[in-house]
Amino acid sequence: MSEMKKIKNLKEFSTSADRFEGANLLCPGCAHSIIVREVLNATNDDLVLSATTGCLEVCTAVYPYTSWDASWIHIGFENGSTAVAGAEAMYKALKNKGRLKQPDRNPKFVSFAGDGASYDIGFQWISGCMERGHNMMHVVLDNEVYANTGGQRSSSTPIGASATTSPAGRVSYGEKKNKKDMVSIMASHNIPYSAQVSPNKWKDMVKKIQHGMAVEGPVFINAVSPCTTEWKFDPKDTMMLADLATDSLVFPLYEIIDGHELNITYRPKNVVPVEEYLAAQGRFKHLFKDEYKHLIKEWQERVDANWSYLQRREEARV
Amino acid sequence: MANKGWDEFEIGAMLRSFDGSIDDIAGTAQVDRTYSPSSSYTASVADWRLVKPVFNKDYCIDCQFCWIYCPDVSIIARDKKMIGVDMDHCKGCGICVEVCPTNPKSLLMFPEQAEEEAEIASWPAKDEEK
Image (tube, rainbow over all chains, first blue to last red; front, side, top):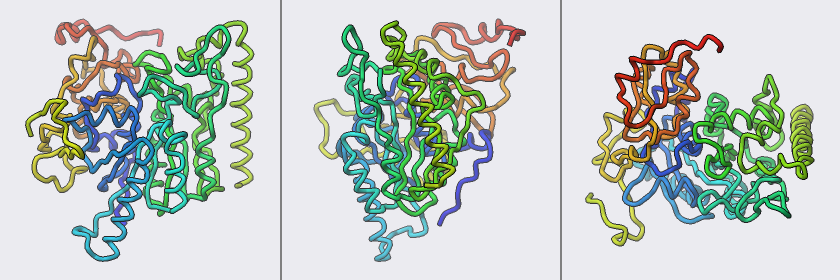
């Protein structure tokens, strides 16, 4: 077992040598690369990475360039998680046979995927990886939309959001279905660790990633990734949106250990009304018309109900 | 490796980030690495930018908020100090300016054509209202 990287404060963290390169083609102000950097810098160990089709993959591997300084593989839309699981199985097998050239090294296996590739298309593959108990981590960059192909709704898109396949207009207020609770679904596989993280809380994020890398078994991480293009806000406001998401409790930060031990890791001192989170984004603009105003109230009620559900679950340890 | 055109794509292509081998990537700073031409580190997205961040080190407290929140690995930090912006990789999103906690801010956005020395000389004064 290799030693865990010590990160006490941001100054110490900033001595990390990045293994993700600039001049990728992600939009200016994209939160994807912030999350990827925080994940990769959380460890000094070797990395075996994959990215499924999505913004991250098409923007960081534009032939003839690669933005990754670690072993990185891309296969299809659905099977980034299984590619990494296969690499992990091979590593284990070679280690057991004593055929590894550097057996003292302890590589970490991480697959990155967007919400489309995790909530919808790759769901069965991820579920398989979690069930088989591979020693890997799956990180979802959850921007609540298929941003790469032009903003189609995914099963992560929340109620009221305007997406290109569920547009808001005269007869509709946009997406009608609420997003799935993926962290709970994955925790129900009784995996050792699943958590929700946000790039603006970097310390919480690094702590969870390091915990996830230290445990033996599959780990699921859901990271909120504000999308400047599809959420329709100014690129400079990415971190403000992440702040609003965590402080309004739309994206509560918590972890679930062994499928039952839920801990809330961040309790905002001043809880921001959900209305502010919605108002900051162009995709919810129509909700502020008179005929759809009741939806904002429903949003607040839903977020409050989810927060009290998490608190009760934390107390009951179930 | 010479850069190839779009119609010369190799099926199952493998790109090497480095020339030769680097044993400890996580322990080697970016400037000390031997990047191959297929690493995007050697490319530039400077022409995406309409506005650029200008760094005024007089007000910087080295909190490194800009380093952690930069999406394009463009904030150069050495030995826990912020020393500047990598203008080849900066896309001009402005997150670094938003997260800068000093008063006045030690990073500000200016039009791409602006002269850096002239802007630093006429840096805005402390905002008393904040």
